[in-house]
Amino acid sequence: MPSDDRPQNTSTTSRVEGLRNLSPHGRLARVAAATELDAADIKALAGAGALDPCTANGMIENVIGTFELPMGVATNFIVNGREVLVPMAVEEPSVVAAASHMAKIARDHGGFIVRSTAPIMRAQIQILGLAGVEEARAQLLAQEAELVAQANACDPVLVELGGGCRGIEVHVFETSPIGPMAVLHLLVDVRDAMGANAVNSMAETLAPSIEEITGGKVRLRILSNLADKRLVTARVKLPFAALDTKTLNGRDVAQGIVEACTLALIDPYRAATHNKGIMNGIDPVVLATGNDWRAIEAGAHAFAARSGQYRALTTWELEEDETLVGTLEMPMAVGIVGGATRTHPAAQAALRLMNVSSAQELGEICAAVGLAQNMAALKALATEGIQKGHMALHARNIAITAGATGGDVDKVAKMLVQQGEINVAAAKAILAAG
Image (tube, rainbow, N blue to C red; front, side):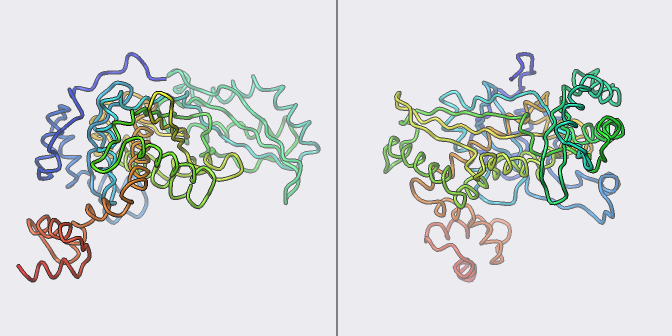
């Protein structure tokens, strides 16, 4: 749950009007002024030289350089009553614009309300060669207190911070291609870390004791990225009138959103694209803050299939008070300490831009952006179709591909949109005509 003592963002509002009309330098200046970022953060967010080769060489193996993505800022977000400017590192056109537009619609109606559970991660310890899996399960559960104490003894700093192992579960598999097995789960509160190193270390430490208790052989000792005890639930509620367009009644738009979502709830082919759209919003925030986007993706999709069928991560419903309600629930194993989050200067600057004080708060912002992105996609699908808005924003890429540079990029893109023919040949013709 959101903490009442979180520091308030120094920004008076995330509603930064006219941002898209400025140069990249001008946008950064406006965002920096709104959030009181220091010179180092401004330089890091600008990207040029943010990650020096020496730092990069310490992060991964065989470093030859760095790879950059565009860094944008989603505006208009209110999350749990707090104004938030959201950094997003992404290459796809329309993502930042769509999230910002949906946040603008939502901000006049309370924004996004997000709740999260404690940051509990799982470590799995696989036990083979057992005389009886149920007997092994009983033996392990009988030693739970001792095992928890042993796990916590190997990470006293985490315990001192209020985290640590909270308990165990034992899952049994009577049959498998390699015979019966038991799998012990350590349930660990990892506080503000993503938690992989902490839970893996605990699992390694406990392996000999588990073999002694059960008489079996421990094989795998590793975390699970299905963080189903570390969930976020984001919610947005909009009156139908907020969805009115120039040609459509808001009630009809809301009905279209519900109908579009329903297909994703029953059809895995649609659900895959539906959930990809949600991750279009979440992954860029995860990436901008130096977190493991692959872990978030794996957990999200595994959670979407937990019923035995792959389904949408969101639901959209019409309520009797003439409102549309959207809800997103998913695992969110992000951290604000450790790994690239602490190493990469731009990741640190991104966290300060959002003024987050805990991993839970970061996860809640990620979920709000994911829900906004989903709303944008469903609204487009329910009205004009997904391509019209996307291709208009893609026009700048087309112009660059055709050879436009500098001020010609926006000029050519604008003309492509006006003539309704957005392709490289048309862009080259515009450039040739001068």
